[in-house]
Amino acid sequence: MRVLVVEDEVRLARALQRGLGAEGFTVDLAHDGRDGLHLALEGDYDAVILDIMLPLLSGYRVCQALREAGNWVPVLMLSAKDGEHDQADGLDLGADDYLTKPFSYVVLLARLRALLRRGAPDRPAVLAAGDLTLDPATRRVHRGETEIALTPREFSLLEFLLRHPGEALSKSRILTHVWDANYEGDPNVVEVYVGYLRRKVDAPFGRRSLETVRGAGYRLASDGG
Amino acid sequence: MRVLVVEDEVRLARALQRGLGAEGFTVDLAHDGRDGLHLALEGDYDAVILDIMLPLLSGYRVCQALREAGNWVPVLMLSAKDGEHDQADGLDLGADDYLTKPFSYVVLLARLRALLRRGAPDRPAVLAAGDLTLDPATRRVHRGETEIALTPREFSLLEFLLRHPGEALSKSRILTHVWDANYEGDPNVVEVYVGYLRRKVDAPFGRRSLETVRGAGYRLASDGG
DNA sequence: ACGGGTGCTGTGAGGACGCTGAGAGGGCGC
DNA sequence: GCGCCCTCTCAGCGTCCTCACAGCACCCGT
Image (cartoon, rainbow over all chains, first blue to last red; front, side, top):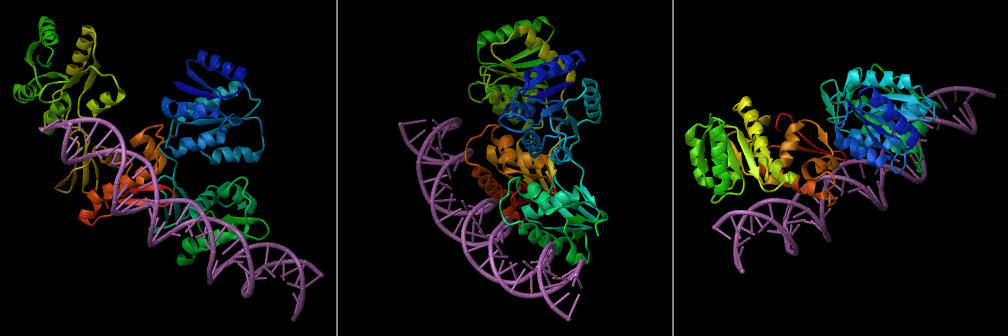
């Protein structure tokens, strides 16, 4: 079993290398995001342990880039923060598990083994809410049998909503995820794009899956409307 | 066990003949590509040891011609070069193993025995999407009954698309796989080559199998358009 | 009923994106 | 050494996407 550890704190990295090595894993180390990404792409690992705070390229970006490259190696994220949002962010970007520093080595080992048992899935499952489906790999969206053409922005927005079905998502949260973490433009874009989406995935089918939660944002009906 | 050695360096050829003969093989020699091809086609060998640098017809061509003729005798290629590309080229063209000169005789013998244990494989599967087929071994592409001539680059691109049918493949992913992991040139090449491909595999047949996914890359219709 | 706040949408500008033709450069076979 | 083919760059063009803006609609509290 080959494991890549991407961690800039040298002491921790070495400790993991020794510890996991003793468990019979082959452990490679990378100390910044760029090296980590390259190694992960080329090394054919069974799992990657990925710190979030990294020089050059954050763990988020590394994970995102991996997934975009079609690499679905199991990723276990490490973070010094413990905010709910960080965790959600990590999992959104395709991490498979998440551990907050400081963590117990035994827990890490258990989680790692769990990940390896699951193995690398070929591709993420199709996202769905009722008869509304979205496939991130083929980039196709369907309402029942009917395919729906979406622009890139509409697609990311719907994808984000589908990853949090039934949850009320504030405009600012939507902005940071679908647009950019430090988006400076008019927050009205969200309304605009929700409008576009409704015209494509709801109106033609007489549905109402994208609900407005006045004062709180938007919610996707988990049964697809 | 009959083995054909195609090698223009007479000393090496004779050495192999003596050595393998002592191991109990029946060894025939050819000293250029054309003779080698004829012998291989007619002689019903259990394996062929094939130098790449040959007079009249290169080892690549010999191997390719063999495969095109439906002959899947195990081929062990010999080469003075050791570039990764050469190796990939050889294996692409249907060689079964590859050895770089200078090589140890013991290693050659081991590899040869491994090949013989495996035996002549059946023809590898062709890639297909609808009536569009691509055979990685013979490097032939057909739309229905019609054969289509592709350049090497066009071929690799189509092969990559066919290996991920229906999936939206980003330009960067295509670049790293079809071109090079650290390709530095203009990403526009992808558009250019998709254009070439469309003119060859789609336009003459009134098809649209290579779909543009705006903002996300390209997708090959899994039913071939 | 009225008004403020919140959300919706039509319009249009600007830009990003993708497609294509022309052509330069290089490798390979002859 | 010559010519052909392949690869890739570049620039121009058309199309589609994104977003800002402004006015209107709607909700809700008073």
